Length: 634
Image 1 (cartoon, rainbow, N blue to C red):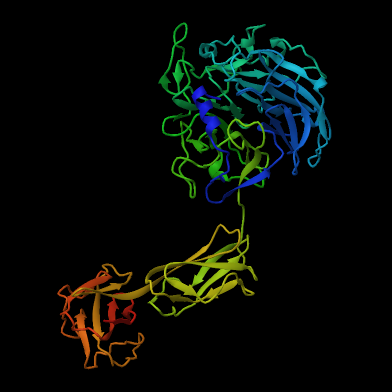
Image 2: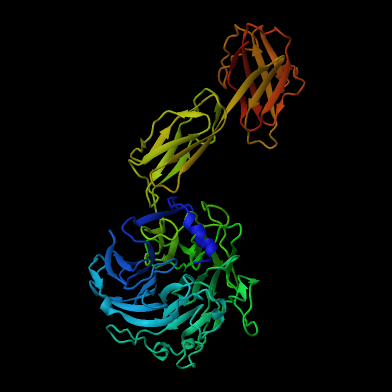
């Protein structure tokens, strides 16, 4: 796919075993997890079944279960990057059974585009009763040079115009890509609808394949009359937008840049001839020169530097289109978005067109990072949109394998049950005590209606315990509640309520006030952990310490363990003026909203005593509050 350097790297890579990472709201299904023999490419039949082309020539059908072999393309050469590289079904497969394959052959030094005819259940979406015989082979292209082990191209694809497109590599001979008569480094467009039924080892003339509106159709008898684009190095994977007919081509770079390019077919009666630049350009940078003057070149819509990115073999993916009532549509935010990825780096990226230019799709929640829409797709060798709206892909178990592989798809999770917060959030309590109001949530179904008997699992982040154990079952109105008790940690607490498979969870925030007392040599450190919604967050405190014997003072805000009327209670701080506004720390009594105080205590003064400490304060919004009673043995 790329240079010898990349090939050596490929052989050293470990087997792919890491799950894919995709944005929030998407999931990856494994549809075929075993039974493949290094699947290289796949296509959809008109009824939704999938044909899979395996490296050594076996073609399999997937109809929802285990893949079944349909037939084997003969004389497939598998050395190095060669193999059965591409497959596509005829748009009229249900009536003619035609499939087209692109492969390297052991019979000669050429790449082949051949047609085979399937028989059996051509239009039964649930059937695997398909087969083709090697004798049904009809040669389409038979003289594409294959002298090098690499740069073979791939991806036979049908456009919405009914024409068959084939992208071809430069056979490791760069300047041939600049010659439209070389049949290398190009994209060909062919009309195969008029070819006779049955097999034939004789290739049709170029005139017979010429649609008549190609840019060089006037070159009768020349392969150039089939060429619509050139200047490509190794276009392994290409997809065609079924709305515009534009092509989206992943062109593997030499040693610096990977290219993702767009062929725009335009609105004229004749298609344009587009030169993508190789080898005059690698990406947007000068690379080499060929005979003659540099022609007009078309820049890629995305160029990824190999250095620092791990990209070595780009794979062109689809321009996304929502499929009417497709069950797995990505939704309007993805309409027209172009996907591409790298075989080695395993990263998926997206582009969107603003009407004038292509740019990276803004990051969406849950994607691996700001640049990559998906990650861990190492070995993904074909990346296509299915008729259900999902994006399907073949993934090798490692790079350049001879066996194994998986067929997977990316789809939205779709409507799911949800949990919404009802009441109990926003409470501020005290460490060691239960919050006064239960936390209440409601489970709702996919239509947003209450779901009686729904299952809820609560999770706690921060210092708290709950009165319930998971799972908790909703009542007849879909309601579930639990009570939280603040533990010794103090500070912010988050309670999350979820239901199995949900994309929408309920989050309730709590806070526990805490007074911490820490002796350190002759220092005594008191720290109040607090919160407020007031702006500015100016909170006056009264901080008290009692020697043993203080009674518990009952108040409207709860029990105070340091009764200020007790003779052995000492007021350390007073930000309210009730005790003369003193501050024994000298650090003031106003918090913002938390506060720390330092006191110097003579050695031995508190030794042997069990002291009680507590703070009360006035929140500018909610009024009086208290902290926990902190008991400390000295």
